[in-house]
Length: 174
Ligand code: MG
Image (cartoon, rainbow, N blue to C red; front, side):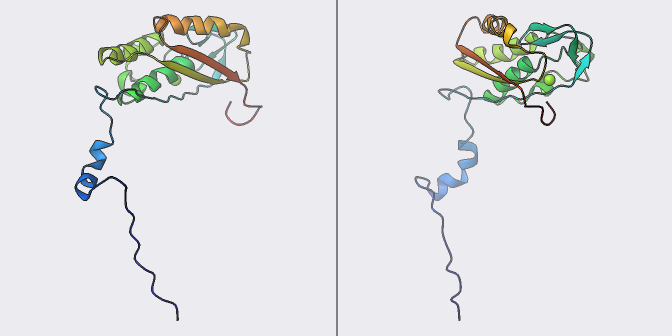
């Protein structure tokens, strides 16, 4: 006959029961006081024939373009979301709703600059930006330096900025 399972307790080091009650609030960093913040951004758009494809504020093709409400710059949209995420300020769609005609065709650097200004007003500056771009075509290697230069300009040359570009080996949505 097997013994009934022993009741197990899980202890969280350093947290008293009183602290546990407030743990949910305590775990949310205050943008005004946290020593540094990290954000993550992601974006994807379909490509369509014609128009201009913008990446990081640079035209990399005049044969295909992103099917998007704004200029469809996936790098700048992801960077905007990363900044907003770091600041716990929601996402790009909340600040620049695609349904709002005000943002139709707007250059995406406006989104990055707006998000970054919010961070600057809270006392933060860019430390580093690491971007991974997945694209089958066109090849972006010839535009890498231009894209980095464009991004550095948006952040007034603050922080280190890196761009990694690859294909998705012909798989999936990319
Ligand atoms: Mg987008």
